Image 1 (cartoon, one colour):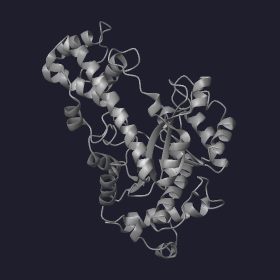
Image 2 (tube, rainbow, N blue to C red):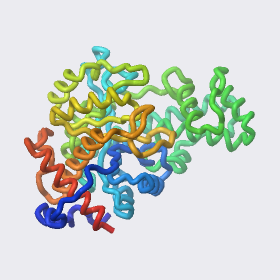
Image 3 (cartoon, one colour):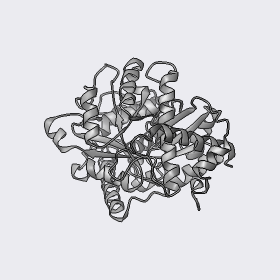
Image 4 (spheres, rainbow, N blue to C red):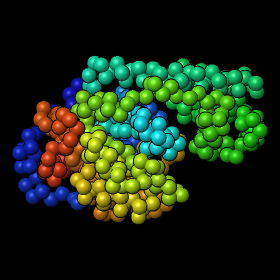
Length: 413
């Protein structure tokens, strides 16, 4: 967009005068973490994201793509058109080398030392600085080199069955991806290729039986999401014939990731995995007091959870603990798999979040909104240059952020 709408917003004092009664709802429905087609998404395009968000009465939505901010422009435009306040976020995959050496899993349950880490409330337009941009370009380039190698190995597998099934990086990117081609795009492309070349469902199952080297296809061809996950598990993941390991030298170290986030005006945020369906935790997260101490050492005062992965009781106890320590606590749904789930956040196998959790989430989202607003106005945001939160300002910024969001919902067209 030519001009970021927050730069034209009234001053804080003028915003307060806009709402003399301050008669705001206790909270609104928010989702601070979704992936878009600029990385990989359950949604085919931005319009479908905002259509679903409007249907579910989502008031605040956060874009959270891997490594890229290329979707910011269309996300901002969609937000303005639909009056859904945008949070500008980003996600990285990094490496904690000491934890890797010790076999400590962080928030990746399968790879010790691997860490997912987010930046929240970044400046718009995205500006990480010249050298950080080069660093990010290098990471993206290496990720696409890995994908090209996977396609080459996948073609070796499919060519033995039917050369009509061969895949092309350029065609996959053109048809399925908006920026990065990812492993999930390959699974989707192969599923589509088989369905086009073998219209009969029985033939499709037979082809996948062959592709899976006799293991048998357990998914119905009509269940696209389940079948794509099966393709990944059998062919693209470790042990699969098209698997290509990531070059760990391309993973950014955590201090560099945090540096990029701060340079881009964002709030460092640790995405918590928490419990899985079996009640298991990673070594890094198993003791919440130790996790707290680790995050404080990292100068990170914001966490995020994807409640659909977690037991409600475990989630609530964990959130209330970190909230009591002054942390921002955000929730999201990711939507970075083929499954189309609601945008409205809910815990694993349960109903909606309870009101206490919604209030905590809403307050934290309002702080991020205030941070974006203040940064857009050329003022100090929630975090200082070293990543630490501004002391004692959380409650005031939450009130300011709520006013910013309500002004946006009321006035922006």
